[in-house]
Length: 223
Image 1 (cartoon, rainbow, N blue to C red):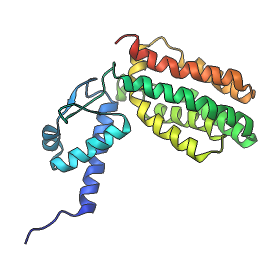
Image 2: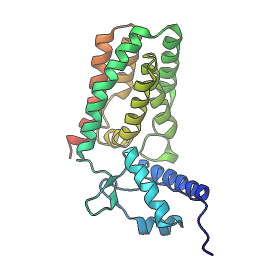
Image 3: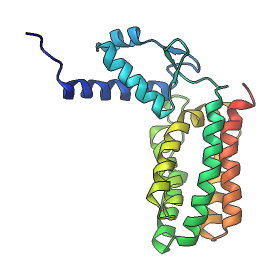
Image 4: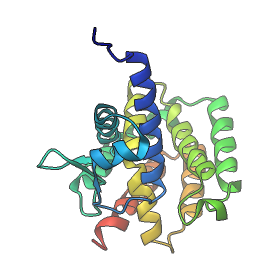
């Protein structure tokens, strides 16, 4: 009698491999455009090909991998048009959300924005043990600041859209920072906070659009 694999066990393995590959890609262990070979990954992580393929498909959904024409997978390249498409989507959606947040946000929202910005400003962007990439603590503080700014819009559907786009753009953000070391992100975030809390929707939206544009420019200008 043939024994079937436990679906819950396979799911746990897929989650584990997905998390490890996600971390490895984010930390720069795979170069832009490098192939992600299922056979090698299955041996490396001591799991089945099915588990690896399921994990890779999830990475494609996260924006951290792409499908190749021969049905393989790879890390996205600097020149991948998807970065510009994600940036365009964010420049379209997020300024609208920010305007709504400025219009609808209450005093509690203001306090949360101030707290999120304070945390971001005080969190080291780089720590020796995590190499040249943004620290995990800073990356999370960065995400929380941007989401808190937009959270005042009060629209869960728009916020879900932000969450998906944020995940998809995280890799581009890390690469861009390495290619634009002189960029003053601290000043950009400060101006964004100041304009939002001053209830200056036009300036806040303008600052946000420029902030998003600079990230993808760090990839396309040097491709």
